[in-house]
Length: 211
Image 1 (cartoon, rainbow, N blue to C red):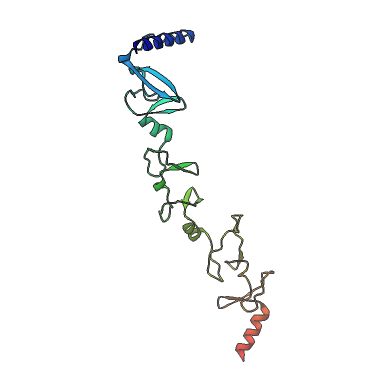
Image 2: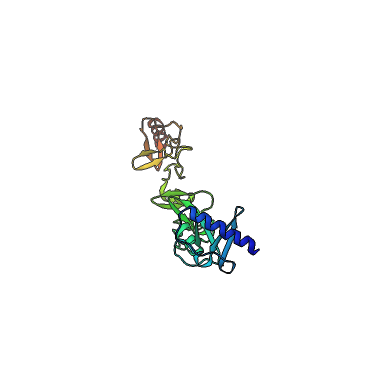
């Protein structure tokens, strides 16, 4: 074992001299060595030299992470590499991170800004806030004045197509005569008792009511 260690020391000293390294001249002996293996390659350090490359605290005998070739303690890796949750402000302690809108969250913290339910499958971003579909539709989509349901964006476009008439909004299909169903392509409608009529049907109904 000691012959192998002597050979390793000689090889390491030779490699360092070839690289022109002047900083580490003390030989590594078994009592002061820290080693670990990665991808079949063994790495060896003085115990005092095996420190976090961000905060310089010792990671000898402790859990550490290798990030972009740097050895990091758990605190620096979680806090400075993984970062913190944009909702609760706490660091991430696992790889379970949701990234959305340039921000990152713990999965339980990624929730609707209105109802606060956890967002799992789909979400909508509006004014730098994340919402579930139900809350977004309730807060931002208009109600049709004829059928009373939300006017949803056209499928595949995200664009709301609606008819606005006298400060009210309608689905295109709902903006039609109550009696004959003829659409008001020319926007000429007659409103009566919260219903829309074409002029012909309105006059017919008015005549019938007068009899």
